[in-house]
Image 1 (cartoon, rainbow, N blue to C red):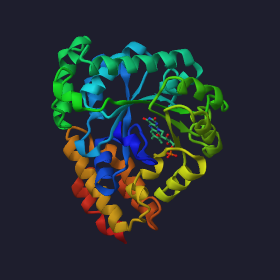
Image 2: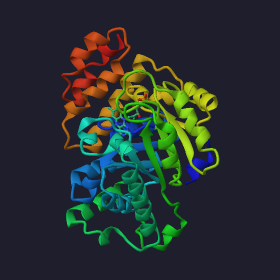
Image 3: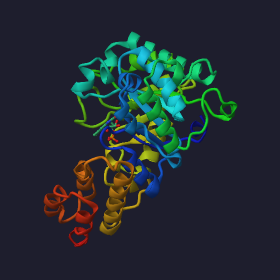
Length: 351
Ligand SMILES: Cc1cc2nc3c(=O)[nH]c(=O)nc-3n(C[C@H](O)[C@H](O)[C@H](O)COP(=O)(O)O)c2cc1C
């Protein structure tokens, strides 16, 4: 838990379909955040044979400290997933109680858990139990009925992340226990943060992230940092650190908000898309943007050689956003099929 000793902390927020391993490698290369989250992954999926989902959990040791984020609604799946994430060497496990996507909330997961506090608490307790059982050597990945394909993909990920220890290896005694945290919103239709935060704070979490919007708001309007500041007050006599999230665009704004609202850290999401420099306040030139985009594409093809190149196009659009010729570039960027195509666009990008 060493990363919580140096506060305030500026963190890369999890973004499903965006902050994959290629994005995080690029971010680490250009301006390493003090803490990084993976995209969320289904606890039910990874504990019930969803081997493809393990791509989401690939991380390189240079990204540390790194938090693996889970979503779901079944405490037993969180118990098993906590054991899996410990085995994979994550520095922390975060539970998503904030996703507004219908595909997630209809199923009772993500921000829907705000309306089911008893289940939310059960999920936190199951996650903690999984970490404790793995850490004490009571239960490992071979004890939770995973099929051989899942055990194989866990080993693939461990190899990628240079994880050598297993739960029964004494070298683990030197390792820090992963943190347990929750990322949530102010409420469902309106802010109920006073009562909701008290329930979460009673769970002895290491940190709690509040995105200053309700589920109903989605990403519309502006984040309400005054509501986030209420949680800082409520947490005063607890060990739980409070991170704020919503609409932060730069390092200086992040530090200003830490000061102004008393949070121990902030998460930056959308502003990092196509702009990894937001963690440093540097304003990138078109040339720097092009080089970053190229490196992003190179990381992508190295890490995910089996994936379609066109899934990168949404990232390319972010890099072009704000350039004077962005409109013309967009029509070309959405047609790119290879790194060769991308290189051919360099002059357009810099003109
Ligand atoms: C495309 C997209 C995907 C997201 N995926 C996740 C996710 O997997 N887990 C999560 O907790 N939040 C997710 N979020 C929410 C962000 O982490 C963050 O809370 C939100 O964007 C507000 O912060 P920002 O204003 O800095 O972007 C996602 C947001 C976007 C735009």
